[in-house]
Length: 114
Length: 117
Image (cartoon, rainbow over all chains, first blue to last red; front, side, top):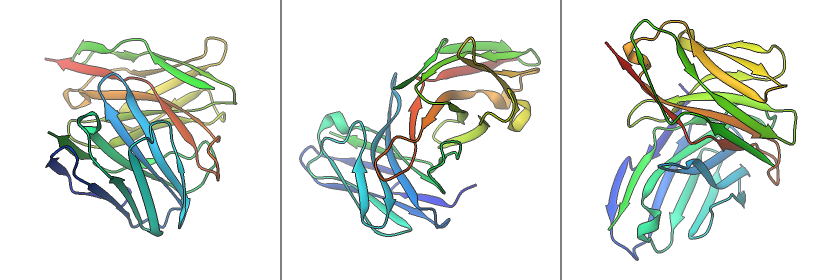
């Protein structure tokens, strides 16, 4: 299995509080991604990174920000959490941008916002 | 633009019988296609990938998929289901369209496979 660790694995918090999720990889892969998984939607891309300090938005980026100060760490921040951000969040990594290279996923963070 | 349609949200089979999970796709690019499996409370695990080298692709745990361009399909099959195959399966198409590089994955909505004794 790819060396991807997500933390925390579970979190419950209140509306309006800031939340940071961490993705740590030991594979030295250049590309990292954050997805959210909701019933009936599959996984949707929130933000991605193509190198240290290089990030861009995905299809559902509103209300989220990211940072990547080291190759191995990719942080996802909800500045002021809302109930609509209750979801399961997955981090993924890939070695290259060739389209036939698969992404490898962490085990996810289950986030509940009350 | 790209999209994926998984034609069945739930499939139920008996142990030892064949499995068929259906997927249709559309893509503006020569497609790269994947099947992933997700067991409860776990991440997604790659089952197999199609990358234009061969239309019949073999994956892990006895699964295989056939790419049919004329039908824009990439159905997943297994000759004999096992109880441990019970999980959710996602068909995914990839395209190199992200700014700065990286691949955009477009997921189907998933098929829940139930395996009964």
